[in-house]
Amino acid sequence: METGTFRVKAGLAEMLKGGVIMDVVTAEQAKIAEDAGAAAVMALERVPADIRAAGGVARMADPTKIADIQGSVTIPVMAKARIGHFVEAQVLEALEVDYIDESEVLTPADEAHHIDKWAFKVPFVCGATNLGEALRRIAEGAAMIRSKGEAGTGNVVEAVRHIRLITGEIRRLGSLSPMELPTAAKELQAPPELVRDVAESGRLPVVLFCAGGIATPADAALMMQLGAEGNFVGSGIFKSSDPARRARAIVEATTHYDDPERVAAASRELGEAMPGIEIGTLQADGGLLQNRGW
Amino acid sequence: MSPPVVGVLAIQGDFEAHARALRDVGGEPRIVRTPEDLDGLDGLVIPGGESSTMTLGIEREGLAEPLRELARSGRPVLGTCAGLIMLDREHLGLLDVTARRNAFGRQLHSFETDLDLDGLGPLRAVFIRAPWVEEAGGDVEVLADVDGHPVAVRQGNILAVAFHPELTDNRTLHQWLLAHAGVAS
Image (cartoon, rainbow over all chains, first blue to last red; front, side, top):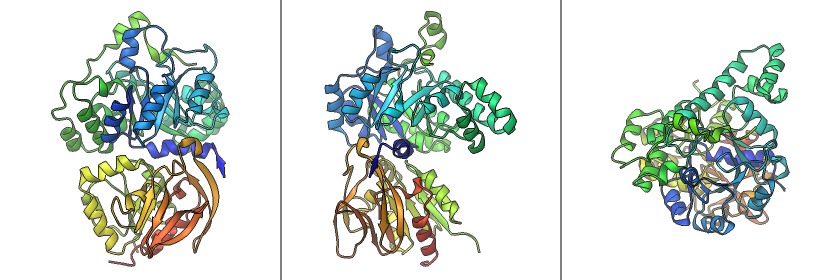
């Protein structure tokens, strides 16, 4: 019996496909998410919108909170570690979380290195804004990728930019001759073997989800039509006026993303969405989370 | 002769991996999200995924009774992991077994191993937060077990396994499905 193989790690992401992974900060929220059809939950100290508002250093959640959430649901429980903070990751593995998100939403602990994810039996998901970044994370052992978007904004524009960049670069690789691939790898700052693999298969070697700014069923369906294989929704659910209902609606729209009538039906009478933030105002304060990660 | 059309339940989960596997063995997969998608199928796959998400989706779409009708018509059904759970007594009630969810534990305990299935042969089995069969009725044939817990069972036209053949290159179970497709009307 072999545990922690890459197939087993990447395989759990396969099982999450077509589903929604929801940020939660309490056991009660986790239960609401599960009852609404979430495929997994992300256990956090604060949702990204509150991390932005609070400022300061954002860290891994308290183990007691993670254990409470694990005790309240039967779906997979993920948790975030700071970029490069391999001891937070060791702690999360000891807690037996099902997936670790090495996340730019928390304050980075290392300005040059990401965690060596091959050293763990628990799988990792990492954020990426472009194909090169995604492939660097996969080379470090990530078993799942999520486009970063801009967490905590309720504004889908950055998520769209990142998924378009990733899928567009994948298509471009497919159009290159074998002779051109080494140069493409150099430009992408990604390992040549992975670049060759993507050029041949026309897809990432792991599952690709989308994150960062999804607030409505239409947002969720948009990301699926643009090539995401599932959605992470952070502040968008529990910062809205009726989280249970919105959560169900986003789950339904993620399943029926290519059926506008179903997305329309899911979008009715959901109450207020989370208040959004214009990206330009964040750029002015240097507050973009997506620039974290190397 | 046109290839057998096999539905893959696509509420959530690794339905695309099953669709690829079905194409590999000469089947024509069809994504199933609503009862109308079940019309004219020769067989069905219920894939891996999150069983609670799938349970809610089947209820939301009104799929339970149409799925039962399809299985009772004698057409072959393959369930993997969450698919096994969906088929058990507490869900669709098509298999006379009680499945225990996440029986092997959290993801840290997910594993792969070699199994030999009675009548179907050896294969590499990938278990991901997998269930096992806790209790099975007399008509259920156990094809393989792990540490004494049944992980592959068959009852008539229904084959259910706790692992993921679709994540490997072995196509034995998808071949079984196709071999039995078109047998019933």
